[in-house]
Image (cartoon, rainbow, N blue to C red; front, side):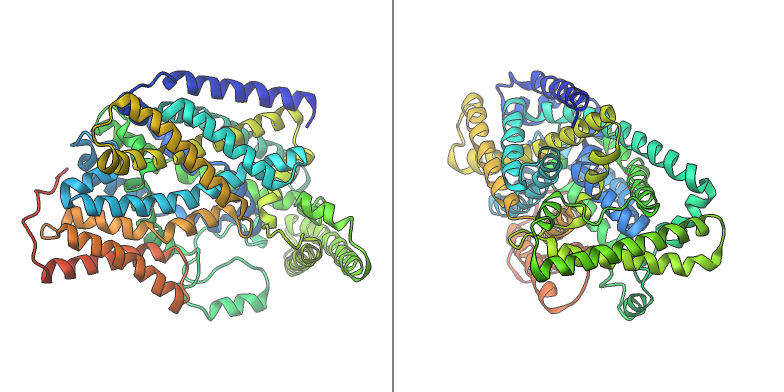
Length: 577
């Protein structure tokens, strides 16, 4: 980081924080602190919804997944527009018809306090764990920037984001999200421009797409089996598996993630609070639809950025190790470990040279070089894996793909743009963490503190307590974040959510569409859905995205069964759109 990069980063970050805090720092009521007075414009709420998806995790993890797997990850978002339309028809009117501050308040009106409390508690557990991943992503960037180990940086990021949210409330979160989106889009487009200039200059525009296709980076739709690897042996092994165990294909993208998005955008307090802060039902609908039809193009840009970075490194610039901690550890190796590491480094150098030569031939239209290019890519990847085995600190488990984009930022990006990108990532960290913290606190305060502990507490006292509760959740998530490390961040955060989201969605489906369901049936359904996911996880080999469908079906089936056999009182009328 040069002086110019530091200045750009500090100035942009200071303005982002100041503008967010000033908007709601004086909030004295629960309505003002958690719903921003329900006065947020629809376009700002829409950008806020998008920002929680296009976060630091998406940027860092998405580029890494594009680098390693190409466009395959975009299948994850195929169901998003359908989910948003469903939510606009049924869920938005359901929430906006009542003066509520959390999604789970509605469940008490429909099922009673036990179902509300149980569902809110399930949300708190899932969101706290997912929030830990949100904290880890920016800490990774700042660890690379400063050379400070990841654990102290997680603590620093946790304290800063918690302090910001404690001061600003939801209004500060939404307006920081708006600025985050602007910064990230500018940063992504700028990085794309630099990589295109570099790769097109050496390979031509047609050659870039030819090479990406030869590397399997343009496979955006996979019907049954993954196109993740170029290795023929591994491809044959993958062909023997069903699409149920394949994490990314057309079917998981249309059905597994449909239930994930329905729950995340319709039942998760992080998203619902953005909808509740809009001015009207129509404004909330516009916010959801805005996100539905702009998210996929933005995600494609991130994945294409990863693919271009793959070509950029294929032209002879790929480091053996991306993780700075591994790089430092490699310098201290000796004996047999150093010999094995040196052997891997030599193999990587030789494979990289073959890949560079064959890549230029492939880009020039020489089909006979495709097999050599693929084999050299596999050899380089295997050599990097072996080097990581030797250089990985034994007490640390971190996915190398999480460092691919940060390595490029700090090694090659022009310094003013580097400062802007770090500011964008930090703004994404603040807004994503603040959104999670605010939702955790609102659910704690509205569904527990004001419902069970202090139902007659005035707003001033409740807001003061909210800031204390918010600090607790920030510390708890920071503690969980310290234990993270293994696996792509973008995948990890969705895997955590998939354990819980389907079951939570099932409760709301019972509320909307099962008139005979009682509170007992809904509570039993929630527990049944969670147990269904646990049983499937331990007895079947299926991709985690299907857990959302399993949980929702388990909840609805168990709830319907209990509603049939158990005595029940007439249910209130279900809200209609």
